[in-house]
Image (tube, rainbow, N blue to C red; front, top):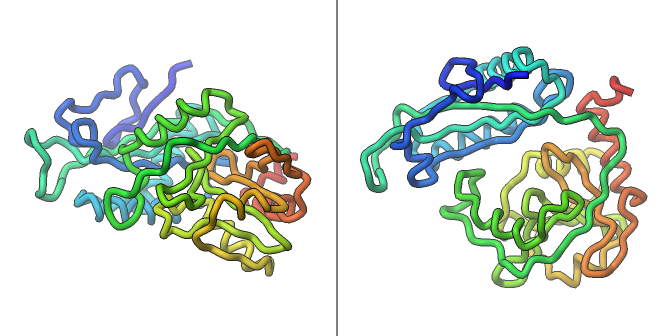
Length: 284
């Protein structure tokens, strides 16, 4: 079956989709992306993804406004064309062509492209083993971390962990504070309080992270964001990871110490609440 990609207003077979070798997204990493989960053809938390993407474009001096409505139409067209209602959509903005050398002027003609892969709906949290990385989390290029094409720190960390999808590497900052996973944010529970590293650590403000913080507050679960040492993480009662595709992934092992994984009480509460918002219960 041919897989179609959206590129600058067209749906093309993936073999025909091309960008210029002079695109600064390719030459200098001047590009951004969002990975969006669709459930039954509907993108989840699309407004939050596009808001973060727009903030990144402003930071990179890319002059384009992508509305939630337009992004929704792109994703709907892909879901229909590829017959993939349950999917992961990667939406990219690449700065566009420019002269050789770093460009200080505004990019006025960015490329926009999106592609999919299938995701089978799951109704049970998939546990992870968390692996403490020797490699430290790099600092953001500017005042806050962008979800950008500057991704080698994550790739090098993934090489350290290996290709096993049941393992996730956990970064510490150079100062030794708990940061985030290779492709996830990290949370833990201690004595009924939910903890997660603050944005001051230089982590990505994940869309699922933001959503869960709001939901925890609505559910009257106490929340603390801050700078935490490894010993505080390892003394937790429950640990879990979050991202848009894996949703909530409970940790059952880290640093040789076992944790309750999917049996964690607050982890289960947040997962059931999350499922209700995605509409997954309709698939049961």
